[in-house]
Length: 288
Image 1 (cartoon, rainbow, N blue to C red):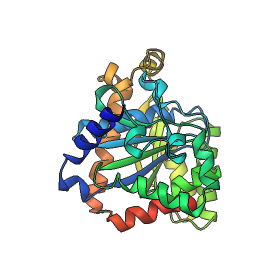
Image 2 (image 1 turned 90 degrees about the horizontal axis):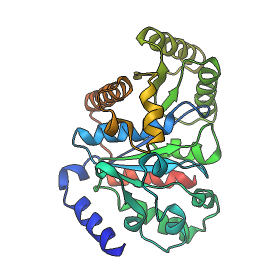
Image 3 (image 1 turned 45 degrees about the vertical axis):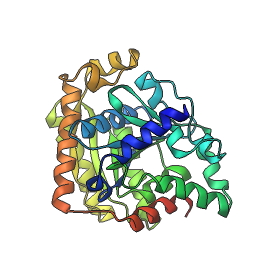
């Protein structure tokens, strides 16, 4: 395993200086469970990777992490092993099919709120090693606004909120954004509507949320796109294979691919680049 970690570290470091100029932190979250958030996170990461960007998918779902299950790649180590200093950041990074790098979820996330100052410094220094090694660190959080999820939203350059057209999902997605804004957090939200019957339903759902957010939260909410309701998704889950790897041309895969393209276009228009100082400041918000 040590040899594999060393090989992974060298591969990541061989990407060159261009990647080092733009490491960004993304958080994907939802107001309620069961909206397909983790599936979206996984395939969104793969869509970014397909376009030549290096991605580290960080399963931040407290006690319910399942990225390794969706990939069919059992993870030997997770964040818990890093917090206990049993393993380095390089050793807890796993590599799934298609070369996607990920850190598995685990109970260790609960220990984030109980770290000593010395442990905080150690963990921050380990996470900071990712700067310049990947273009994107993507946190897939648990559903709802727990203390842990709030910290990952605080640490992110942008947060993608996943909802569905179901009224409870819409209400909970709005409630999550409202709570973050009420706490005085200046989060940059993006919206994805999953499991839509057609584009009309997706647009209607997005417009409703955007209007309420604009009126009551003074929040402009860009929409990245819609993902069709697609039976291929459950088939891929049962086969423990990423949807976009197994069914790259199915409607849901094409929807997520389009969302990745929209996100990158939006990012290029903004011309935002995160410095190492900015990256460290965001990582430290995990304990603010």
